Image: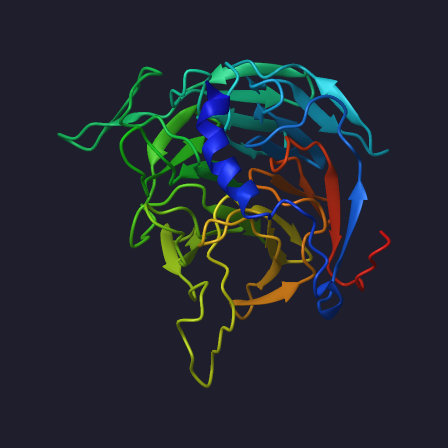
Length: 356
């Protein structure tokens, strides 16, 4: 059962007493969290979110109360309400990925209710409210490195806990956990031709899954993620023009020079990310020590530096989703003491207000 696969790690976290809300030292950092737009229906963890031309959607995920994988699709309206749209066409799943163009959202891979990893992908059209199956991830032929169509049960390519983004009219998916190993391979998707191509592999020292990703001014950033033991402290950005991953400063205080002193530790996995005013944010998720993270960090791409902001003010959680809309950043859902369906907005320039 899915519930059995989650209960051990959750029990350990409960035993350490970390499911309570954290207020300590919030006043010493800038930024304010405000509870917003509660979701009707079921709470969920390990869902996906995508934004089609300013319309935000959430779909898939796992509800712990009912021990159930989900496939409903909900959209955030301008008045803050959530509207049910056409159910995701594929089978219910968690740990999938999503990306979006200006007209369509794309959802694929993940784990089904038999704990089987998947390769299939689907396209959602905002205007017609219709899902259509598209080409799934291909197999790399080991003899000539060519790509071949694959069945949904192919362990060599089926993946969960990957990252995905859309830039330069292409969708990208990479990293993640396969049946027997994790991977650093990336694929790019051409929506005009419904065709996948092998992209350049990200040069993590060791393969990761459950990494974090955001896109700032059309530049994708991937960082952290789970290793066999602990989390990675590496961060990269993708140069679309040269098709290369560029390594950035580490996420832990391993560099101390006159020009750079990074007194922080942001080696996270399963964190929620969003972008506001050209800066990236990460919060929640799991720390390198295996505990739930409450810290919020702001990334400035101009100087490759992180600044700590006010801690997340909801209950501790992993498996949340982050999204941006109208230059505002939000965190929703996740799992802690239960599967959550709350939504929180972060105001990075505001002073902390414990009453909000």
